[in-house]
Image 1 (cartoon, helix red, strand yellow):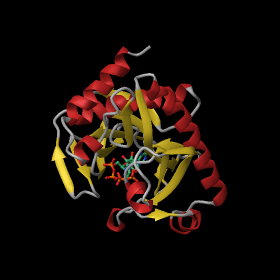
Image 2 (cartoon, rainbow, N blue to C red; image 1 turned 30 degrees about the vertical axis):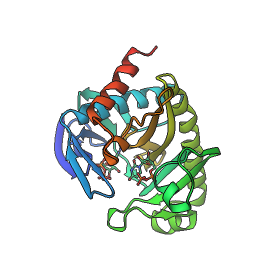
Image 3 (cartoon, helix red, strand yellow; image 1 turned 90 degrees about the vertical axis):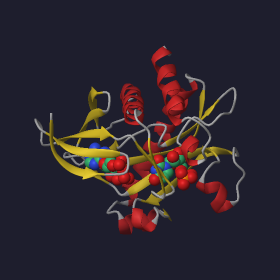
Image 4 (cartoon, rainbow, N blue to C red; image 1 turned 60 degrees about the horizontal axis):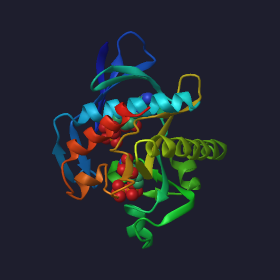
Length: 237
Ligand code: ADP
Ligand code: UDP
């Protein structure tokens, strides 16, 4: 199934799919990184949770008509996806204040954003993924204004569906990051992953953080938290 290793990132390995030149195998690693790679640890089994949770999210989004790269799960830690040329802009949607925006703008954690905020970050590790505006994105990321408008609209649509998806397992979706890419046909489709590594999820009853902040802020057992999310998804109707 897997061909050549094309790229190894912080969270995943990217392989050429053997049978189809237009597909990739994403292999989820057990590594956790935070603060632009400064904090690192390995959690045996983490790759499985992110792969299986991300696959469930992409299945749900497909049902809701969101075009994405996801083809199917291959095994516990790998999924088959359509190859895209990633637009190097991370789209962050925020429903509740947390993380970088609290520090950058002095906004108190849990502040509600109505309507949700959409922010763009230049995907460039060497620069620490800086916040950018549309003009910067057009200059740096070979993307047009009309495409940015389409991407932001898709991100807000994804937000609506993800809020319902996580609400169903008693989690509030505070914020999340998306990546989009262009496929062979030239269509812009949702790519990369949607998992507790890339979302902030707060338990609706206890308020407990149930995402990578558990690692970032040393709040407890990351694997146990990710396992709880997967179990809730498996038990949900
Ligand atoms: P990073 O590169 O930020 O360390 P990962 O370890 O998750 O992140 O590596 C996965 C890489 O694969 C990312 O750079 C991501 O942009 C890229 N990617 C995700 N989905 C696709 C896709 N469908 N086609 C091509 N590249 C993809
Ligand atoms: N995020 C991500 N990858 C990144 C940066 C952010 O998945 O490279 C996610 C992060 O998990 C959170 C949201 O995007 O759900 C907003 O992150 P923020 O800008 O607050 O940055 P952080 O506090 O993580 O530095």
